[in-house]
Image (tube, rainbow, N blue to C red; front, side, top):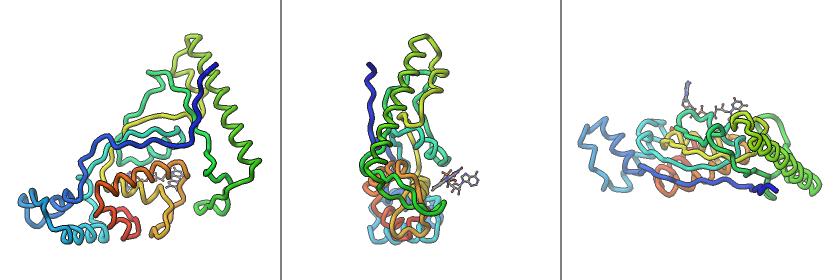
Length: 238
Ligand SMILES: Cc1cc2nc3c(=O)[nH]c(=O)nc-3n(C[C@H](O)[C@H](O)[C@H](O)COP(=O)(O)OP(=O)(O)OC[C@H]3O[C@@H](n4cnc5c(N)ncnc54)[C@H](O)[C@@H]3O)c2cc1C
């Protein structure tokens, strides 16, 4: 009997970073004071906040490229398909050719709304009935179990991993390291979350939004002034 894991969340961990509000100042100020811009990390917070707010508001984005985050992320493959459209990031993902994929699959949780209402590009989602929730959960589990059993049978029969993986669904989890600078991260956050007050509303799939929410908490903690300016200016990436 295969030990198949079903889960409804995503993992995001900060692996390393070089990200701080102060770094925005030295990158921005080189244009007016040259190399003396380095070593001014003790810059007055009010001045720093004014500078960062100006840069975000007027969309002078390049100073934010010097702050960099590396995340470890584990998410279903259908989330990775969307995530990897963000080209201003570096990725290294586990391989289905070089290792046997773990039997770990996504199933929508109780808080995942199931009914799509509205027009393309501006959907809202509603909860769904108990019956719809039951058939969704049952169908995900049945089909993932069957697919993984088939995969396992082929692996045991000596079929190459890269061939056998073809039967697995996009709900299987995969893990990767993602490195993004603060500018690219703000672009990701603006597109992959639906937040009250954003200047350009976006309607992302809930599961990638869960990744974005975890990125946002880390961003807020490490770069609170930049984060505040991002929110204040309608969540538009500079
Ligand atoms: C709600 C939603 C629905 C979507 N639906 C679809 C869909 O149906 N089909 C689909 O294919 N995609 C879809 N996408 C993906 C979308 O088109 C983008 O590929 C994705 O959001 C990455 O955005 P980005 O290009 O801004 O990010 P990045 O690739 O990280 O790029 C960041 C910025 O760099 C610049 N840039 C990067 N590459 C280039 C380039 N080659 N030329 C010029 N400038 C560049 C742009 O300014 C860009 O905004 C959807 C995205 C969202 C948020």
